[in-house]
Image (tube, rainbow, N blue to C red):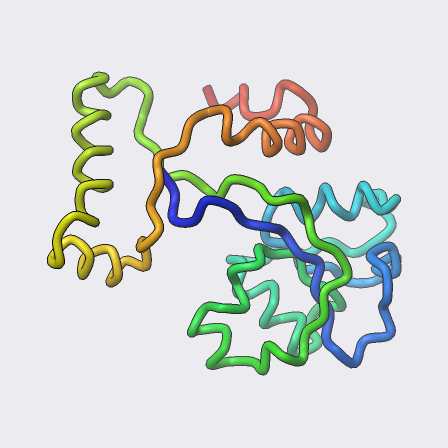
Amino acid sequence: MHRRRFIQSLTAVTAGSSFRIQNAVAGKRAMLSYITPTWMLRNAGLNEEDYIEKIALNPPNAVISTYHGQADAAGAGDTITRLGMVKKNIDVSQLKYLARSEKLAHLPWAVRDDLSVDLRSRIQDALTGLTGHSTGQDILQGAQLTALTIATDDDYISSEKIITELYGDKYGEEDR
């Protein structure tokens, strides 16, 4: 399950930046928060050595750091500029977007595959069932999970393709 059906990655710069296209990031500092923004830069013709990659502690920090001049461009999801903590710290209208990815399934809420099918089903039913009554809706609102939907592996085929293009088909196997 995930909070929002789709998310798009963005390459963002400050509105006053002279950058007009994504490959203008060459030689500059890119604050990245996810795999997809890195993939977007590769597809714009930039290799790892063409820019200075900084990894953000979290997606909001990528955008906030770029706004404050600690990076020249940010790579993050399109939901970031709608977050209250981001709006409180920066004027999001002073950002412009050089590129957007295709729509990708949002990060999932997942369970371990060694849990029984019954337990996985009960967890899924408990989370999706919260929308059926006001107390459950309050819980979801408090957790900012008001758009939970059921996801399947097929929803992540595009994401898997991005990961494979960047890191090869063995990515993540060392963790298994």
